[in-house]
Length: 267
Ligand SMILES: NC(=O)c1ccc[n+]([C@@H]2O[C@H](COP(=O)([O-])OP(=O)(O)OC[C@H]3O[C@@H](n4cnc5c(N)ncnc54)[C@H](OP(=O)(O)O)[C@@H]3O)[C@@H](O)[C@H]2O)c1
Image 1 (cartoon, rainbow, N blue to C red):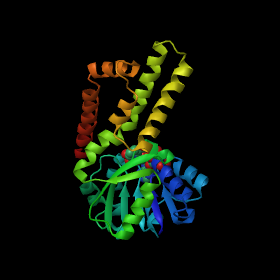
Image 2: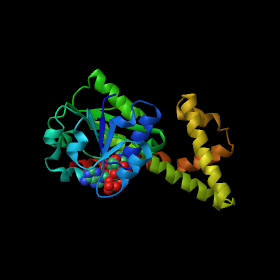
Image 3: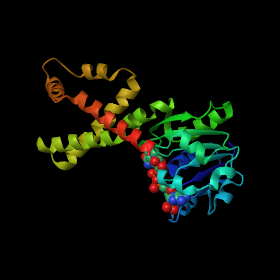
């Protein structure tokens, strides 16, 4: 793989770089990173052996691909730094809510631009990233994008008009699951368990159920029905979820996140 430059050396850049190195898809000497005024870039360089630079010119001197992984608000502060320097490069952005049109105005001469929405399990290689591109990717650029996003877990291509919905499901989704885990833990405590046991039961139940769901490759409803005997305990619990309009609540949750994502990408 050709050289990759990262603007931003925080959590997301570190997850991608560590995943790429772990899978031996590229060597550390072909990766360069640039941070802000803090110490993240130096820490990342010390940990992984990638090169840390302090200017955009050094960053892009020999790069073939630029990964944009600072905070979305930093994009507006780039002025025209990247207009010429990204000529002919593949630009891959992980910035939440920054549309291809906006990215194209900052990187007008890039050979192609990819917009991604990863999620936090990407930090341990168990993420799911949605992505779309300005133009159809060439085979070699597709391989680069597959390697970069594969470092975070799985990836799915969607059209740009689906990115807000995807954000509502998988981008924000881990937080819903964490909230569910906390609710299950607290419900366990309320039902008479001690806090440590309730937490272990909640975490392991979520983990085990998610692994089973992924390994069985059957609709979630089938697995649900397999553990629900008529008038049994699970049946009683599920009825309560139904009475509380659980599905409507989740649909409204995703809609709210989608609507906020739409608002943010307009601003
Ligand atoms: N974390 C997630 O799960 C997640 C999920 C989806 C999307 N994203 C997107 O990923 C991006 C990065 O998120 P993160 O969690 O990795 O953030 P983060 O850990 O806070 O890292 C931000 C990085 O940007 C650097 N930076 C700040 N100002 C800069 C500048 N002017 N030029 C170059 N670099 C600069 C920071 O360097 P210093 O330390 O030197 O300040 C730091 O290395 C965000 O745009 C976010 O929307 C993240």
